[in-house]
Amino acid sequence: MKWTTHQAMALMTSFAAGFPIVGMAAAWFGSVVPDMLDQRAARRAFFRQKKFNQVHRRSSHWFGWWLALWAWSLTGQLGPLPDAAVGGFGFGALTHVLLDMCTTHGVPLLPFAKKRFSLKLCSTGSLGEYALLVMSVLVFWIMEKPELLRFSVPLY
Image (tube, rainbow, N blue to C red):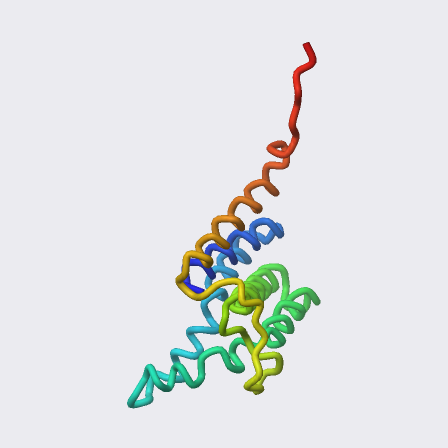
């Protein structure tokens, strides 16, 4: 998925889940961190793109790391503001992994496994990705405005 899709979905889902503004900002940033980690790993290589292709969607895209980070924030050990930031960050990265799971390339089932799981709903940058984003926006908009689902028929 493209970064804009990751960021939009993280922002929408964190808003719908009732995150505070700090958590929503952290989710927005966290939603691109798995790819940033892969880019950082490939930065020093002579053939950067080749190295990036080798490391992309490996351990940085395993849902377990991000789920653990989000769950840790729910323990309340850090305090309200840090919990919101850490939780939002983990949540955003988790949305990234879940969205990449929808693509044809998928994500690893285990942190260092080569086997990947994919729902094969769309390809990165395809019309299907943008259709998924538009449908998600509509779903979240309707969730925020449930009165749109009520149909009233006037009885004359």
